Image 1: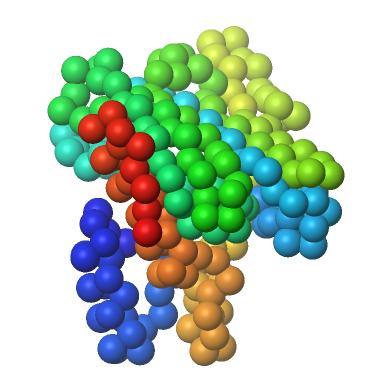
Image 2: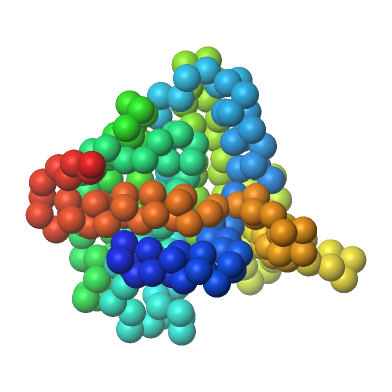
Length: 239
C-alpha cells in the first residue's frame, strides 16, 4: 500500500474513515496451491511450523520494463514484498529479528540482490532470496520456490510448474497457468480469483478473503527491517 509505515497507515485510515473496502494485492494468496497449503498448515497437518524458505530469481529484463525502468523503489519492497507475506502468513507471526544482505551488480542506484534470515515472534525461522539474474533467454521471467517445513511434514511449491512445458524451434516456454491463463475464451487463475473476491466482498459487504491492511503492515515492517539491516550490516530487532 505504501513505501513506509506512515504512508501505509494514512491509506488505511482514509479507507476506514470513508468506509472503503481494502484488498492488498498479494496475489499468491489466490493461487490454488498456496491456498491449499495454507489450509493444511492451519489444520496442523505439517505439525508445528519450523521454517519457511523462499526464492524469487527474476529476469533482469524485468527492470527495463515501464513498471521498473528508472525506479528508485527498493526491489525488496516492490516486487519483493510478496516473499515477506509468505513468511509471516505461513509462519503465523510477524518478524522479531532480521539480518539482511544486499548487493549491487547491475550498476543501478538500487540493490538488485537481497538475502535475508528472519526469526518470527513465535520462533519460526525463514530465509528470503530476491535477486534479478535469471538469464535473458530463460523460458520464464521468474524462478520461484517456496518451502514450508514442519515437525511432521514438508511442503514445496515450484514455479514454473515442471509438469507443463512447450518446446519450440526457436525457444521453449514454461507457461505460468496458476497466475493467469486463457482457455475457452476465459481468463483463469489467481488474478481472476483475486478480482472476483474483491468484487464479491463489496457486493456482499464482507471482508475479502485475501490479505488485509494488517497483513500488509506486517510484511512492510519486515521488508523495511531487511533494508535497514542490509544497509548497516547489523541485526535489526523489531518491537
